[in-house]
Every structure is written in structure tokens, then in C-alpha cells.
Image 1 (cartoon, rainbow, N blue to C red):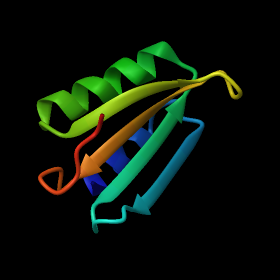
Image 2 (tube, one colour; image 1 turned 120 degrees about the horizontal axis):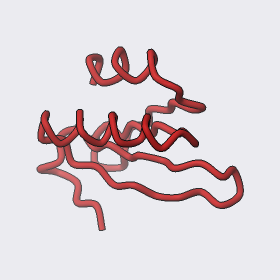
Image 3 (cartoon, rainbow, N blue to C red; image 1 turned 60 degrees about the vertical axis):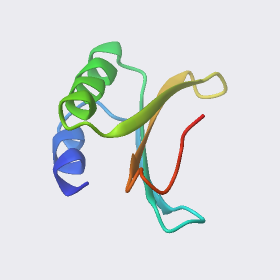
Image 4 (tube, one colour; image 1 turned 180 degrees about the horizontal axis):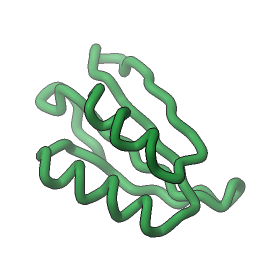
Length: 77
């Protein structure tokens, strides 16, 4: 998770939030309105084989990337 945060902090992100899920998993949410930034973070997650989901947030006009760590405990739908 630290490597992803260090990578993302150098990009054009507008939000970064980390929460602990109800089953003890860590969920990292990164937000950006820059399409290139989203692609770079998505590529990083794919290479590292992290479970992630993209979601467009209409109210803020940004795309959120939710990354789940310890994904064997938690399933994204």
C-alpha cells in the first residue's frame, strides 16, 4: 500500500483516503479528474495484481479508484 501511495502522490490526484473495512481489510480510495493519472494508477494496480474498482463520481466530476488490500477476505462487486 505504501508503494502505491508514494507513486500516486506524485501524480495529479485530488483525493486520497484509507479506511479499514468491516472484515479488517484496508481500502484505499484515490480520486482524480485527469484521465492519464487514472490510467497510470490502474496500470500500477494491474501489474501489482491488486484488486481494484473504478467508479465515476458525478457530483465531483472525478473518477475514484478503490483498491482493496488483503482481497482474499473482501470481494468487490
